[in-house]
Amino acid sequence: MTARSSLTVVLAAGEGTRMRSALPKVLHPVAGQPLLSHVLDAAPHGPGASLAVVIGPDHQAVADEVMRERPDAAIFIQAERLGTAHAVLAARDAIARGADDLLVAFGDTPLISAATFARLRAPLENGAALAVLGFRAADPTGYGRLLLEGDRLVAIREHADASAEERKVTLCNAGVMAFDGRRALEILDRIGNANSKREYYLVDAVSIVREMGLEAVVIETGEDEVRGINNKAQLAEAETVMQARLRKAALDAGVTLVAPETVYLATDTKFGRDVTIEPFVVIGPGVTIEDGAVIHSFSHIVQSSIGKKALVGPFARLRPGVSLGEGAKIGNFVEAKASTLEAGVKVNHLSYIGDTHIGASSNIGAGTITCNYDGFSKHKTLIGEGAFVGTNSSLVAPVKIGKGAYIGSGSVITKDVPDDALAVERSQQTTREGGAKRFREMKTRAKKPKEG
Ligand code: UD1
Ligand code: MG
Image (cartoon, rainbow, N blue to C red; front, side, top):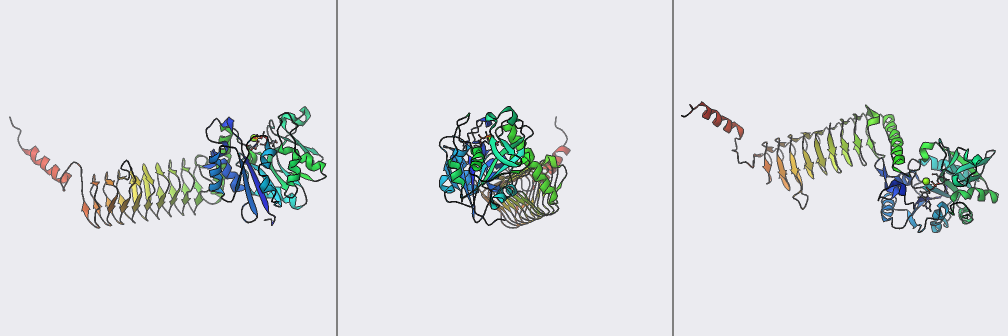
C-alpha cells in the first residue's frame, strides 16, 4: 500500500468498429461484466485515488456504466479521436490537480489486475518519471515496440512507424503507463503528431522523458493480462482467460467443481465452504452460494442467494431476486424470480415461482404455477409456512395461502385461503371429493348389464 495519491485516466473513446455491434466496445461483457468495469475495478480505489474516464461523444451508455460502477469518477468527452495522448489530455482539468501518480489505462483491456497497477507505480516512488507496462508478445504485429539501450527504455515505436529491425522486437507496449503526476502535463503537452497516422501518440512520452533527462522504465507482465479487445474473437479469448482465473480461484477457495471447464462464473460470485457445482452450470453476476449447497448440472443462476445446504437443479433457472433459505430445494425444470423461499421449502419439479414469498417447510407440488402477471402488472403470491400445494395448481396473484393450508391438486386459486384451510378449486367444476367419487360412480355404471 502506498500513501501516494493517484489519478487513473481510463481511455474509452474508441468506436470499436471491429466489434460490428451497436453496443459501444467497452460495454461488451466478460464474465457477465462490461469490459470497462473490469478495468475500473482493477484501478486504484479508496482515499487518495481519483478516477477519470474519457469517452466518445454520443456514448451516454458508457457514462451511465461509469457512474453505476464508480460514482466518484469524472467523465471527460474526447470530441475528436486524434490519438491516445490527445485522449489523455481530454482529462486535463483532472490531471492539472496534480496527483502524485498519473496512471493511464485502456478501457478495452479487461484482464489487468490491481496488483499490476501497484507494481507499475512503485518505480515512481523511486524517482522515475514514467513507468511503462510491457509484455512479450507471441505475435507482436500491431503493437508498439519497446526500444531499449542496455536495460534503459529509450523509445516506443508504433508498428506502422517501425523499421524492419525494430519490428523484430517482441517486447511490446501494453498501453498502461504511470507518470510522475507533477510532471505529467509538461510531458504530455510536448507530444506532437509527426507520424504516419498524424495522431498524438501517448507512446512518444518515453522519448520526451529521455530528452528531459528523466528516467523511463519498463515493468513486464504476462500477455494474458494485457490482451486488448478489438473484435468478437478476442472477446471470446478474454472470456476463456477470465473463466480459467475464476475457476482456479473457486477451486483454491475449496469449491468442488466436478468439471471446472464447463462451469461459468462471474467475478463477484461468492462461495461458502463445501459448495459443490456439477458440470454445465452458468452463474451470472450477483450470486452467493452458502455452505454445503449443491448446484446440479445445467442450472442457470443470476442475482440470487442460495442458502446453506440448499439444492438447485438439475435444469433449474434462478432469475434475479431469488433467495433460498437453509435446506430449501429447487428441483428440475423449475424457474423462479424475485421470490423468497424460507428454510426447508421444496419446489421439486416443473414450476414457475415469481414474485412469491413461501414460508418455511412448505411443499409446492409439481407443475405449480404462480400466475403473477395479468397482462398489465405483476402481483405477489404469499404462501404461509408449512403449506401444501397440490400438483398442477395455479395460484392467481395477488393471492395469499395461509400457513398450514392444503391446496388440492389441479386447483386454480383466485381467492385467499385461510390458515390451516383445505381448498380444492377446479375450473372444470369436479366435486370436492374429486377423482375418488367419480371413480366410484364409474365402477357402479360399469357393473350394469349392457342395454339392447
Ligand atoms: C496502442 C498503443 C500501442 C500498444 C497498444 C496495446 C499508442 C499510440 N499505441 O495501440 O503502443 O502496443 O495500444 O494494445 O498508444 N483511444 C481514445 N481516443 C483516441 C485514440 C484511442 O480514447 O483518440 C482509446 C481507445 O478507445 C483504446 C485505447 O485508447 O481504448 C487504445 O487505442 P487503440 O487505437 O486501440 O491503440 P492501438 O493501435 O491498439
Ligand atoms: Mg488497441
